[in-house]
Length: 329
Length: 119
Image 1 (cartoon, rainbow over the protein chains, first blue to last red):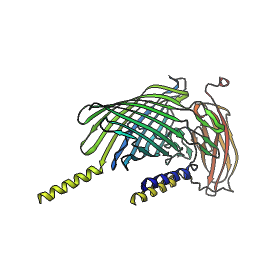
Image 2 (cartoon, chains in turn brown, blue):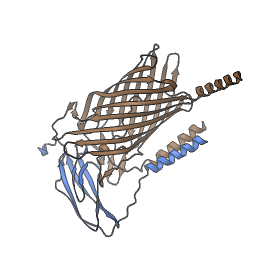
Image 3 (cartoon, rainbow over the protein chains, first blue to last red):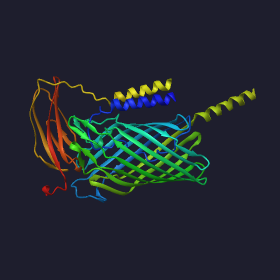
Image 4 (cartoon, rainbow over the protein chains, first blue to last red):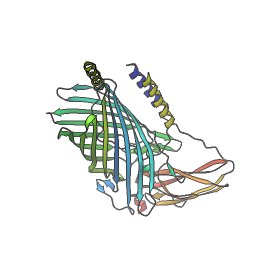
């Protein structure tokens, strides 16, 4: 309990101290959403560590729900991104999660011109996930979570003393506070359905000549999981991401911000020995609506490697192993 | 206890990472004479050429904008912005050498691609 209190106090202190010290810019939204990262809260002394690689690609401008092709140039945006996430079950009802993202590149190319290329650390994320309700017999669980995203990464990257566009800056430059709930229900022995609802509030970025606030974001997702074999799992996910319009100086609403996109995300997961898991999935937009004219999301491919360590099981296993050795002696 | 120490190390790291650093000092040697734009306002996705005239030796020019993008570098730069940056935008030019740095700003209004006045 002391540890939890210490964490909460220091986290709160951290938020208050650094809340107004970011440098300022606009328009990017930082780390991409890792679409297979949601799971129920962990059991006590269980640690999971995941490394995700993600390639994403965009090349179409959208206005409303249609492609906008009137612009007299062709632009392509793509990125190679890695995300490290660690979760640890402090108790059976509380899981601490931390993550950080890194962009190997975040590139914007325009035909006939030199490309813009940013790279570096993105945002960090800290969250607490609670095991609000669990029923192992019915394979039902409810796991709400609260978190914060910290703009620890690069937000003012330059090339030849000229600031790069915000679209290729790795960090969002804004503190973001998140709340979400994950509900999972097993159906029979081989199937499960899950739902995820998330809200993200971005803090106002304010400095001498800059005033910007990203619109609030809502994400709702439904997952269908099927255990295709002893080691192979398949998931299908439908996810709706909605972001409201941003505001800038004098509380002016930025019309060409905010969107509503529905994704279809198929996923395969292979469980190796010793609790190693490898997942591959893709985010495919099936409906897009963008306010004003905006570069729209194209597609992404991701691969995720996860290692799970159950320290209680590990201790029990080592204890039984020692016991066997003693018996043999 | 070890976990508690780890937490404070993490906290200190995050504090250090998020703190704004400003090591520049003003220069008495450099003078910015003018900072001008070829177009103002500018339609979304069109560009304006911004030119700075300054006196001083071995000058280095840095360009920043609160909204919008640059092409080029040096004392003359091309500024443009998409539909997301419609509004009155601030472009900052910082001119520096070994004596320090001075800066000036110019405000450029970016108008919507759909603005009927642009047609």
